[in-house]
Amino acid sequence: MTSYVRAQLSAQNYVATTADVWSTPHRSFMGVTVHWIDTDSLCRKSLALACRRFPGSHTYDRVADILEEIRETYDIPLQKIVATVTDNATNFAKAFKEFGVCLENSDEGKVGGAWHW
Image (cartoon, rainbow, N blue to C red; front, side, top):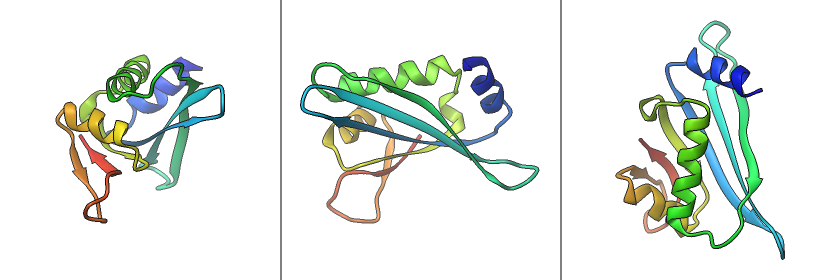
């Protein structure tokens, strides 16, 4: 499956991603998806890159490490990711800010939105 995803993504010039962490009383998970427009059909395409356990604290550095690990698993160059959409959690905001990513947000004063690489 990983080789299929790599092949699909290597054929794209640009992609966008989404990322979220959610919790139940005793477990936490991180999900990451990738999206692009097929250049031949102009149809939207999407794949799930990860839905994995996220044990421990949801700190910005752990969020950043897991996102980097997922990106590397699928050989996605940073230059290919034009935006990452997240919720308004401060751990995502700090993770992206620490790594020099620009935040675009239509709601001034709120954290979250589309992170441009």
